[in-house]
Length: 422
Image (cartoon, rainbow, N blue to C red; front, top):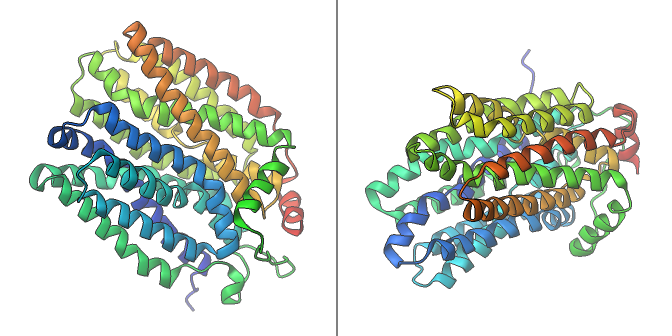
């Protein structure tokens, strides 16, 4: 007799596809920047400003997106966000002025992708799963790297053969195809289909939908979470995570390679290798967070990341294996911090408020990314070398490794069960 697939995995699978495509959308500006610069004569700084608006909104919209999902449901919120992304990307093909780029890619796409981000994965995991939360969150988080890895080479080929407008229309079409997928497969809560969350016992109380104003609810969670030291430790460590990954390595590794005479194609290949190994590392991190102390996992993640960044200046000068070894090692650790951070957030604030609280922690991550990108750029412009940036980031990661051990823990099983009741 065949066993039926639990609907939780159907919902998680659909959300995985959404996150996969949203990640590809967020990565698309990297291949549009030079074609736009050539056609319109816009400066790199002007083009970067639209991307900056996108990144800021991507981070700040998270907690409010989680509150909207709590009030209006996952399906409705994701459908609206996908429509925003689709409209923003499609309208980009018709733009003629720089302000239109800021409006379409900066604001519309920023709002949409900020909703279809890590807070969406955290919300699905907390509602639909009691067991295997870490493993599922690991897979959903890894989709961000997988999306870039799968789509960017194909998008670059389309730009080369048919121009940048063809890419925007292709991406918009792909996002439009996700609308019926979400409408048919995604449900808001297990109770909507008359079942319990995956791994829940029959006496597990159902989570009641919130009737609060989403804005007020998001601010309430921030106010209540801010009274807890664990929230600030998690937000601070995630600030370091953003600064040392998206902000520093994601933005400046390719230019740094070119400073050392490494061709751009080979440098981009290093990021692709990181993406591949990030898929492995983050998925494994989710599995580990279901079985081991998440504080100790974060200690190792931040500690090893710090050591790898301290070694990076020497990797540029190493023969043959220096940078490839760094890419493999750093890729395994790229966003492996997410599953244990989600778990610790749930234990700190409870199952109900965890997605919104994690949204605020993700906002801290994006602010860190902005600081890391800007700081490294200033260091490179002032000193004509990135070395102080790598060293400073490595040292801060080592500090974060020690700090995360101070995060308090409830007993994993009992704590989560009590949190569900609160």
